[in-house]
Length: 580
Ligand SMILES: Nc1ncnc2c1ncn2[C@@H]1O[C@H](COP(=O)(O)OP(=O)(O)OP(=O)(O)O)[C@@H](O)[C@H]1O
Image 1 (cartoon, rainbow, N blue to C red):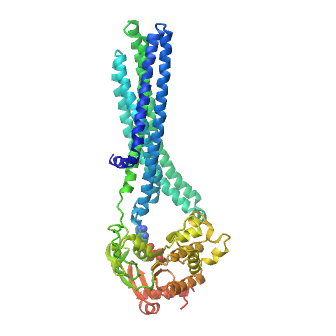
Image 2: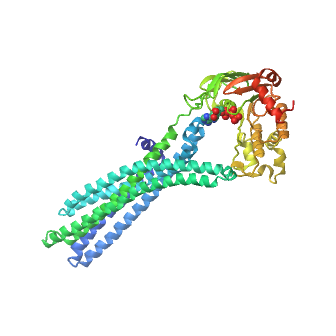
């Protein structure tokens, strides 16, 4: 309920629509309520007395009332749609913005599947709930209360029937809507699982095919889909069963009214028109309750969704940015790790343990070690994709927590292990970190990343369109473009995380040479699994199980670091290493 209240702030810019819609609906309801009353007069005063003039007058009045009602209904539809659609669009925009500011930790904790469900399904549900509330929630209770009042005055003899019927109707509505609420929460959770599975399967479709695991994946998807189907069926059945129950109770009421009415008409106590009007009002009460309970169900469905949306909006960013105090001038690129320890989960196993080292501006530092030793994690801490648990990281002598995220990250070119490119042209991708880059800058960066050679061969060159995930490029081409993208920015600090693993040895050597000659003022971290990638680095860190077990040049480490010697000899034996 709290979450719904908080989301209602988003209706503020559309207050006029939110007020107009129910007012116009009230107008339509008033007109709807007048119709049976006029009809009753027409029958009892006009038809019964054979007074055709009166009948015609009442007929015209009914048409006028219907037209006014129509205008109210159309107006309500227009304004309620405007309010709810814009309300949802604003929430969507804010949720997307918030996700954009999420730290890696925040993103890990939600999971992509849940975030997709929230941005699509959950926001649509609250949109529909608002629209139905504005349209129907006013209409239902107004018709309901209005009908009861009119019956009380017009057909007091039949009024006791309502006394029995209404509590029975309300009992079923409350019972079933309570049960439906719990089930709809499960439906949204099922949607999360479905989206996660779908996203994973589509992203990994080639692996699935290569491993001939199509049937296995289809089986997994079926399991998730079947479970969602079952939950949805139960939830929908609870809602739909309500309608026939309400209808049944009202029909019983009509039969009682007819029986009782027949007796009273025989006694001359009431007129036939009164019975007809009563039955009409019973039908209106039925419609009012049905539509109100539909809205109620929609609201019950929207409550868990509102809670999930609010969860995103209220998530505290694990990596807080400080306000720009303007004290930090342009970053030069000296880096120091001071007794840094880190774990991905609170109280979890430490992935980095007491890491300390310094790098001077313009130095190239190689990081090597067995798989899972913490090399990538170390690289992620510098641009604050995660925050350290213990110790501190200094850039130019300042703790990175005291530098704004924007200036820190714009000073670092991070080339991830897995290249991520966006759909659009090569040019758009290269300009991702520097939209003002000139064609010349793009050409130079591509040359240094050994990307120019394949771009030149493309018919549209820099305008060549990339598909989603750049599936129309080879692994090596993707890596080269992602390196070129970081080069375009010419940042003071570069981090290459196994960024040349899919590049042939010749090109890798050229890229590394280019790094030395053309980026001599840039502090470069080269995280690698091959010694050939880091052999010429000014300093090499050897990592094992989250600790630094060696720190020195290639030759120093060959003399004094057993793990480095082991890696060197293993790679040399395989013929992989080593051009010294
Ligand atoms: N997002 C994450 N959440 C939880 N644990 C993680 C996460 N990323 C990595 N780890 C764990 O942290 C440890 C270090 O991983 P990291 O990726 O830093 O190793 P690495 O040395 O770069 O390995 P590789 O050479 O295989 O890339 C591993 O045990 C890994 O399972």
